[in-house]
Each structure stands twice: as structure tokens, then as C-alpha cells.
Length: 245
Image 1 (cartoon, rainbow, N blue to C red):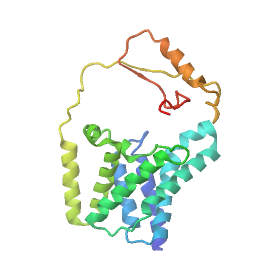
Image 2: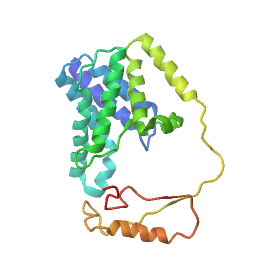
Image 3: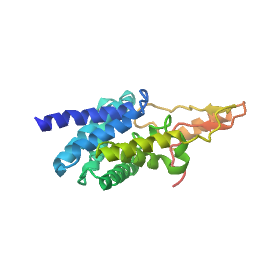
Image 4: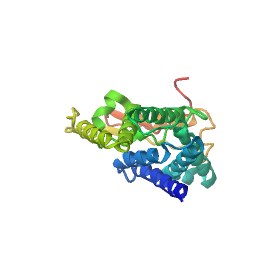
């Protein structure tokens, strides 16, 4: 009965993680989902930690990546989401004992798994990093600690919430202080941005099979811009060749 309840709650933790992303944008969901997952896997054996983490990852990535099914179909979406969940399950690789040291260990493991997902397999897939979820709460910290640092901070604070009352008070004070740091970001004035969508020759997974085709389409559309702009934004797949290789 206990394991059945944990299986159910691990799914809830994944859904909470999903709620912290668009279109819901409930940023506390990242903290709640992480805290719940940690509470479920601490003091468990490796197999249970891995299974519970996988279930959490599956219920996180299935709705998060559902948009991809529109372009590639249901089967590739399922393979991608469940494949990401397998990698996500690595957060349960190490044992956690519910103390302050485990908070650091879990945060480091979680952040490292996110970095691994960015790099592998097949060049990586960076969607779903918790560090993307706090633009409404911790935006002023991004220039200093980066997305990876925000991910570490989220998981570290989340674990402290569920380890002990003393750690709960410390985590509460820490997050209040972090949110209260004055933002030195200009919020008035105007900033001109132009987004370019050049399109592709064909829809589907083979949209970039012809070298330079997608890049050329976006370059041509960009050259048509007549209004001055401070920033021009291209989609992430606007170049079918990696410019850094």
C-alpha cells in the first residue's frame, strides 16, 4: 500500500514540475515537485529510487513535450518523453539520508542530470530545465549564477523544506531573502525586437536534410527588414548547420 501511494505521489511530483513551465507558469511548482520527489526517494533502495524518479520524469515530460506530437506524431513524442524520463531517473542514482549534506548532494545530482540531458544522446535536448522556471521570481540572479545555478538553488531549497524544521526555517528565510534582493534591471523605456520566421521546405523530421536551405530562408527574410531594430531573434532551428563546429 505504501509503495502504491509513493507511485501515485511520484506522478504528482512530475505534474507539479510541469506546472512551473508555460503555459501554466506556476513557478512554486518547481519547488513543490522537487520537494515531493525528494521526500519519496530518500531512504529508499536504488531500484525504488530509480522507478519513482522515472515515473516523476514521465509525468513531467509527457505533457511538457506534447507540442512535438503536432509535428512528428504520437510515437516520436512518446519515445522522446519517456527517453528523457529514463535520463531523469538518474537523479535517484545515489542514496539520500534527509540531512543538510543530502540537500547539497541532491541539488548537485539533479543539476548534473540536467546538464547530461543537454549533451546526450544525439547532441542533447535541453527542454525542461528547472532553471528556466524562475524568471518571475529570481530573474535578478540569472546574470550571476546562470540557469544551472538557478536549478541548483531550486533543488537545494526544496530539499531543505522537507528535511527538518530547522532546515525548513532556513530555506524559508533564504528564499525570502533571494526574492527580496533589489533588481537592478531597467524596466522602463523602449526596446525594439524583431522575430524572423523563415519557414522550412518541408514539414517533419527531415525539414533540414538539405544543407543551408533553412538558413538561407531565414537570411533572406532578415534582409527584408526595413525598420531599425536592437535585436533580431531567429528560431532555435533556423540554422541547419552548427556554426561552432
